[in-house]
Amino acid sequence: MTVTFTEEHEELRSTLRRFLADKASSEAVRRSMESAEGHDPRLWRQMADQLGLHGLVVPEEYGGFGGGPVELGTVLEELGRVLLPSPYFATVALAGQAIAVSDDDTAKARWLPSIADGTLTGTLALTEESGSWNVEDVAAEAVRGDDDGDWRVSGTKMFVIDGHTADLLLVVARADTGPALFAVDGGAAGVTRTRLETLDPTRRLARVDLDGAPALRVGPEGDATAYLRTVLDLAIVALAAEQVGGAQACLDAAVEYAKVRVQFGRPIGSFQAVKHKCADMLLKVEAARSAAYHAMSAAAGNNGELPVSAALAAAYCADAFTHAAKENIQIHGGLGYTWEHDAHLYLKRAKSSEQLFGSPVTHRGRLADLVGISATTATEG
Image (cartoon, rainbow, N blue to C red):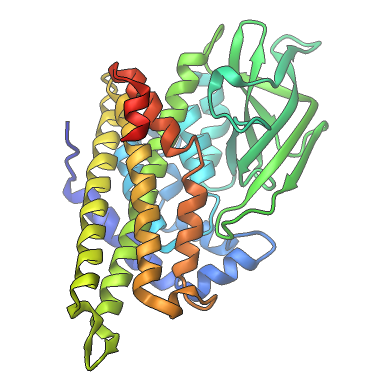
């Protein structure tokens, strides 16, 4: 299965690239990542009002454009190219997709219109102090409240993307029938949010402590493990697209520098060692793009290929981004190690993204299980 990009997709890509070239320069990104909010609220509004990006995965009846993983991946690839600090990934790729695929009409009507118009931010809270991203390992508990339909959630969630500011927290917790998804107001009683000090200054993470926080259940009744695995796979595919954008930016920067940096009277790009580095980067980036695009297509097709393609994309795109970010620094030499140059920001994003939703080793192990081969062989490969 391969993804087919239409003229509308290419127009979306080119329009967004022009927009980001104007609004998300290196200087603007650094201002945003160092600000109190961690992003530019004005730019957030422009992305919603001028481009309508927030409603990409929202069905038309709820104020969106009725797109899916391909459209979202196209946008995230461009956002990844510039390392845009923004609640977009958490709100649209995590919360928005989780609600959109929930088959829960009440939840859709309640939250999707506000996500689409940019007035509501959200995120997904899954992993806990164990660091596991497996739905089955969730220890947070949800118990029924006094009123019908109300729940109370207790537990600690770690590494919640934009969890310190999100208006809506979608919390994975264990109910009496198994794992399920619960919507918690970010400012509700019983919710304590703490921003974490992390490696990547362009993406903020938080610890969320819940002590009997009031919640509403989202998604299917009973054991929602299958639904939650789908939500996680969709998030993984979205992250893979973002990683491809970051890897491509590293490749572009390395090649451009190799053309203009002169040593011994000639551009360093003419040296065989540098040529080999750039060629290896190109191969890895293009292979990662193929893996991400295949996963986007599988996610859009809803034909049972999503788990395998998501695991493959997660493992390969994470490795490719980290490799490209490291080689970009090497080709830049001493300049690449300075705070003033953006190379270190890409490496920090690559390394932090490498651990989101599971490490490459974890995903290779999962892929091995899905296709029925030895996990030992998969991890060694």
